[in-house]
Length: 452
Image 1 (cartoon, rainbow, N blue to C red):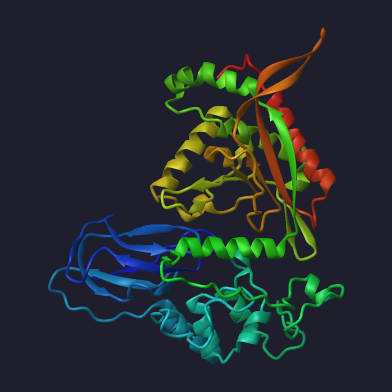
Image 2: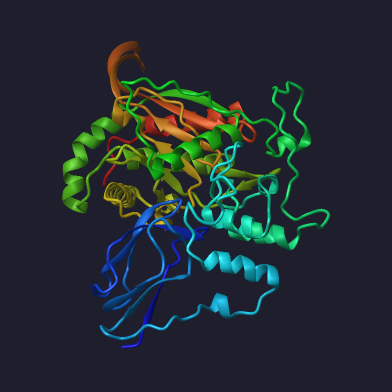
């Protein structure tokens, strides 16, 4: 059989590269079609790459820990005993300007944390993360850290991508440069004066370093895993980017509790799905987003992007203790049964580490059920670049005032708190508070006689 090149497949919108975490086969091993050949990790999710054909692993072109661009050849499969002659990729054969040829050579070479890009830190003092690929290109082209800091990133969490740095190279030295902002010198003392226009655009004018941590002889040091590092960077970035405000509302969900208890058995018998509270809550959120479309927005510079699709992310705790947010795309197009199926499927894929990159992309609003852990309420951090997030507290029996035609009375009701955090740059208290109140109204108005 002819040699078959194994390419790193496209793994979703905006995913340009992946890190090889573990080879599942070695050179000389036999492999079947669709059998996993390697485990990879992107900045979104971990996954396996299946073999495109049956044969023998003849060559492995990257090591564990190397970063591979999408579309690059990372292994060769052939028949046992066949000699392998290196094959070139289209990117290497194409005619390009001198500057781009140098960049593409850096792109196609194995990139490791200890290899190219050693002169550029992985994470700058300003908290900006640079992938090995970007650091390698910067070093090859002589781009300093200060220049790199000034490039506006279009990737996940504002990261500088290959496209951004190549665009910068094309316009380097031009005035003005495209997509490039000039960073102001860092000052050691805190500037209490009003922010300048550059500062309001997101250019760092102040660098805050974490204080040193005293380590005692009885302390245990645990290195963050890759996902925890990503979560940490994302949370710090979000609080730095968005001024968070949180509004709280308490909702009476007695009707929902009684209806679910009455129908969960028949629901499972008819649909084969477990009926949890999550799809009921998401249904109410979707209705409220339709009533208040300005909550389903994102801020792009000085422009407010109103998202027409309602894609609800559901924060899911993993067995490792980490957190991931799979997304229900077009959640407004599902009925209760459809939402239940989607919620259960995504939760199962998350816990078994089988989510695809597309499963966690494109969210426009996020829901986090902190009540799962017995928490009454929380102050969630916005999942950038979204503008708001809702935390659902634990449902508890409480004495409450019940209004009747014959007067008020005290009764035992099922109550829960809703905590709505939102970006105060584009969502004011009136809108943010009205939205979460509307969610509570939909929950309280749930029909006890509703059919499945």
